[in-house]
Length: 333
Image 1 (spheres, helix red, strand yellow):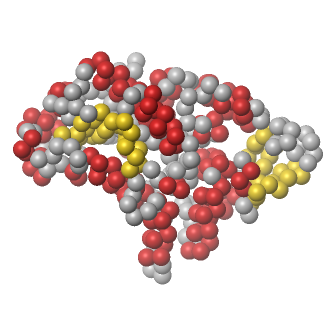
Image 2 (cartoon, one colour; image 1 turned 135 degrees about the vertical axis):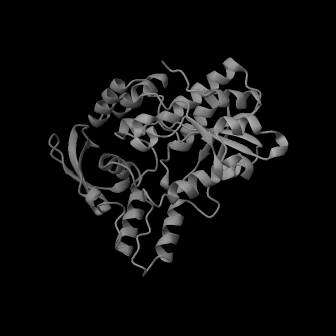
Image 3 (cartoon, one colour; image 1 turned 90 degrees about the horizontal axis):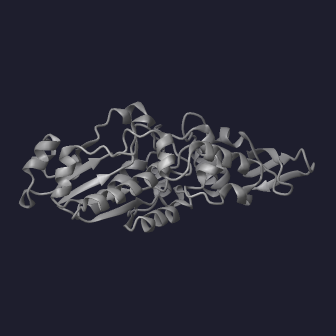
């Protein structure tokens, strides 16, 4: 358990002194992978630089994510490089695309096909940093269990976009064997926890899925301080999220969108306003549907769990315990 999938080509690249960039978002997979890589480095004495890197998404990011990344880097004694899209954050890019595509009848939102949220706001800025090194490994916490597409990914591969032309189409082992400083840049992708389960990720991070669910129940019951006390992972998991990415991810479940809306009301209102302006929905189904989702949250006065609905930028409920009727502005949480 907790072994890293390390192909011989990766071991050889590390012996050659490759730089190692550990991509972290603040979520559970990045928390486990940065800890595992730091331990592996100490055990094997890698000679190249090892650092963490975080692609900051601006207003689209959970406000807790960057502090979490800083804490993870410090705990594992790694420097943290924070990179951003130079032309503005993801929301700026969405607005720009909305104006550019106005009148052509085509949607402007990012999606499973047009993943510019990833390519321009994560991959591009990260690759700009990776280009500083002639031999570099990008470590990411991608796991097979997450999706069929990720299950098909090899544990390691040449990162063609920033690898010199004569090596980018080579097989992994051949590329490593052929590389020399004068040959140009060789960049590799490495997914060392590709075979780990979600339960193993939580366990390696110091908690468990059962504990997370118990704390989530405490949070929903209004025992917020108790729910979060001693929790060493991203707090969004206690708020109710299954995954942590953008605060309103185009690929998120309905549950995660609703949780994101509650804790990031300004971002939610902004995206909803773009739907209204443009006539194009955020994903398969408008964010207006999220406005109507009824969630059960602690009453802000008596703490008893009550059914809240979100509409017109307000949380509304009739508390069953204290019988108070609430219409609270979106930022109350």
